Image (cartoon, rainbow, N blue to C red; front, side):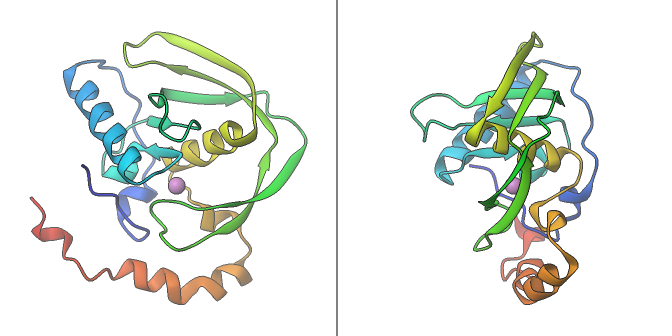
Length: 173
Ligand code: NI
């Protein structure tokens, strides 16, 4: 299982690089991320959250019943004008839930693990939210960036604790 990087880790703020090699290295990363997503009981996981600054996200809205959907180099298009606010958490922000305003419906174009392009039109519900949340990670954005400065100030103690975790990351091999 891979270590999930927490808020404050610089890799979460980088713009992730496009993927152009659909090789064993990528497939191993997808396998390890799938294991991590399941172990953390998450809905989605973006590669930067495990320290890999590449444009890859996994989403599972089935609660672990099926393999997660793999989105490589995903691009959102045709977002609905209508937006809705809903509570969101993030594996990189444990213990924090924030209300985030998102498009109700989005379409996405991406590549699968073999590099084949596919499209999902008019995703809605949890899938639409997860797509927007995970693709934000590829652009260095997190849920705290969607809340007001006041709300962020109110969160600042919790965020500081995440920035100074007790475990020493430099020791992990
Ligand atoms: Ni997240």
